[in-house]
Length: 281
Image (tube, rainbow, N blue to C red; front, side):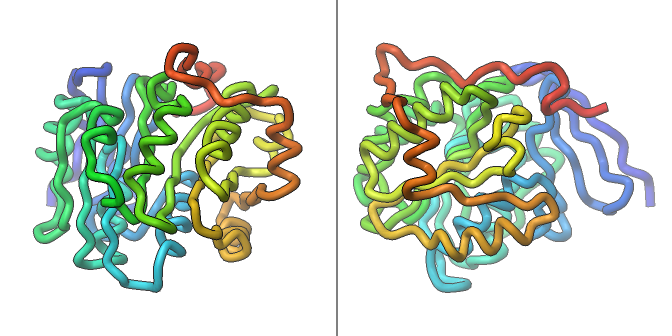
């Protein structure tokens, strides 16, 4: 069998590259302009290489009893890692994946096609526009993993956006977003404040070193009108290869103290990562 070779292509948002993993026969890393975006194992869609993806998977795993089908709206597609995971762990789920980069979607469809019967529809569109067009109470889970380059776009960071997410979720539904920031956490604290103003329950999942401000990194924000399973999430996050902590309640209030939600008129994207924060050699 021929050895897989890297694939490089210009897409709408930069230069995408698919690189095979020498340790896993049908696994690929997707980068855009050198920044890792997704990792997919076509033979094992339940294998999640990136820590933030595993943390979002913990949210998906605890959103309902095991194997129960869910309606999931994915804002941001990348190489469709989490839609593949949901299809494998919750057969029969209905999923809509919204990705603005048409060139990236074409690359993924050509080289990393979804399995037959995945239940996932992939749509080339703006995430905010599709969220606003979605029927109220139509999703069990919203997964937001949208980066323009290495930054979360401003129009996906506002109080109005959080209200739209709340409208689309069913009662007790979960919102989970991959965010990135570093000390003094101006962006991340405003995001927690915004979602706490809309949702009854919010928590944050991140590595202790990130939460202490020792380095720039990913944090997964989780929000719901229903009680969040923080104990179960904490157990799962603590068991990861790179253990994470779940901040909630008074500890999260202390983290957010003094921060205010941002509105559309004032919203800005997440900060540009420092050099080398997410790059690969």
